[in-house]
Image (tube, rainbow, N blue to C red; front, side, top):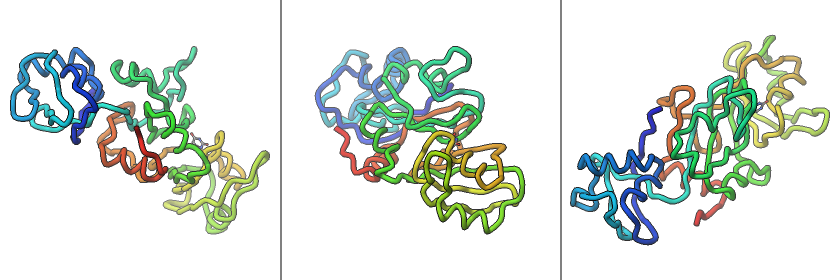
Length: 251
Ligand code: URA
């Protein structure tokens, strides 16, 4: 699976080996060494000569002329395909972690919330447990937008009922914004993420969901360049937007 690196400002806290530095940005150590030996990596304005050479704090590292995101916490977005479960492992189904490159899996990522097996679209991963916690906590009211295809015809009355908050068996869903895009297709924006919540909300309106796709989490929209099953690291700007939204200063 291609795993594009993104640009960013390099700012390591202490000197470290160049190959480790590169692999900490999300690529495998073997790939990092190969790039160095192919002469594609520069430290400041010098082509790197050895995988073991040191990178000092504040030095700029580029691959093929592009700056890399700094090593440190790793955040990814995935275009989750249907048919895989949001779990570390599963005895029956492929998991979202099975789709990630080995180098990323070794970094100790957790999924930010979960999407059902048949739900597609934007799924975030991070090595920063506190950030993950904040993104799913109802306290931070992070918006999540879904496209929902349903049985039946959606009406303005459904829009009003979603805006009032839908009473479900075990809790009342917070008011949600619904836009009707086609008679059987809506965009629903919610600020919480309880079990099967969106499906249950539409079910309560008498319009069972036939397909669900997440487009957005807070300030992040699914990258349309990601094919189903692909993931990429967040850019520094995207990471900063998540931290700002949840008032989290990553260490
Ligand atoms: N709500 C659901 O019902 N399912 C999902 O996968 C996500 C939100």
